[in-house]
Length: 188
Image 1: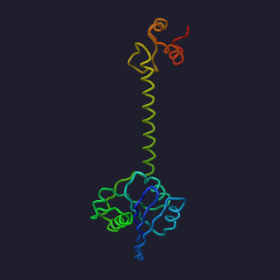
Image 2: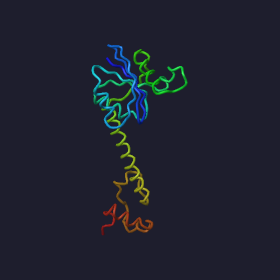
Image 3: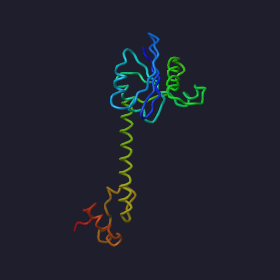
Image 4: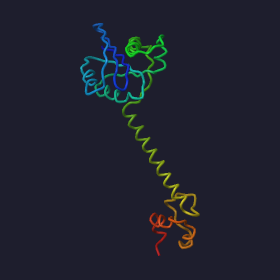
């Protein structure tokens, strides 16, 4: 089994890796250009566990590891930092720290991460929420543009009095807007 501690950044990642069967220890820095990262992780044989610190730009990396069938454990940044006694940050030292925490299985401060299906569902819900907000804004705008409108939905609104009496209370430009939106009102 191979265990990797990875200090992930936007343009590069530093890896500390140990093979538990042979005891071989490796440190490496991968630049995020081309297919270098994909080729490195695809070449790893046997069960592989990767530990990273939670960052804002980690989603592409999590998707890559999931696609390659590699287990990725995401750690809580503050708790990982608290495990290091030195105040200086260094990429290789941080990668080794995550590797040490992964080797001592109970010490790695793992956080819950949603599955890809849950992430997709969240995106759909966020999109739906945005569309509902837009619809509400449009309805409220239409409602404000209509004089004496009832408190129910503007789209279902039908005037209770003849249209010509309402024409006088419409402001400049509103008459044309209302005629386009509600042609039923302006039919003779």
